[in-house]
Length: 292
Image 1 (cartoon, one colour):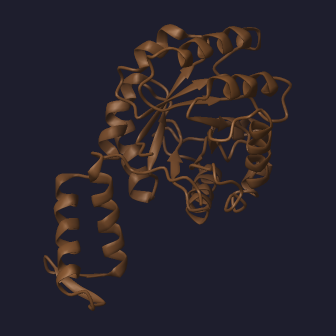
Image 2 (cartoon, rainbow, N blue to C red; image 1 turned 135 degrees about the horizontal axis):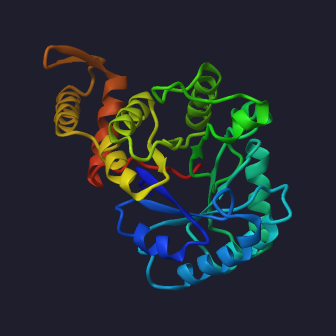
């Protein structure tokens, strides 16, 4: 499954679900957690069930359930088991054991195929579990992170500078999550950009994410989707370079290093070139790979 953009939609807003389908996102995340007040959880479950039962989606749909430790998650997982969205977004994940526990609960309800996308940095303890996702479950399809809950958990005043960049503690969390995802063999998903009207800031932020090794990004508003998709789409220049690198090594398969456009390239460059061309097969959609 190839994803650049995953668009959050409040679970109690069925009107927004329909509009979100037109935004161009590669997947939707229907939210049962933070975007829905406690008194609206049942309404949200009913709305999501109706949406998933219709013929409307036409693209991957994930459901963000409530945390595993909450009294709300049992009803959320019953909905997932019955309506079978493509995957589950797991908030407040503490590490690989949280993923394994979610898989166990889903299997007990008869659901054996929903993918699992944890949000992996929302509590202080979760930071120390970022290296434990490898091998946790064959359903693991990526790691996402967030910088909204963690500051509250530790009593911080904010997580971002005035220009939108993260303060040092949250840069550490972002970096550890990035390496934790790649160590587990799955894609890293960049956190949301909360300034919905700041198109230039979003473009710069998403561009840094792709530069640093993220495969896609969470979105909180439909207007963000096109900018995110563009940031995570290989450019024509990148594709041309990748084709030259692949062709050069195909012509000299025993070479360890070659010169392409006056620059020395070696096997790591070949790996990057192949990934770019793989992404270009489904225009601009870097892969979220299911863990093996």
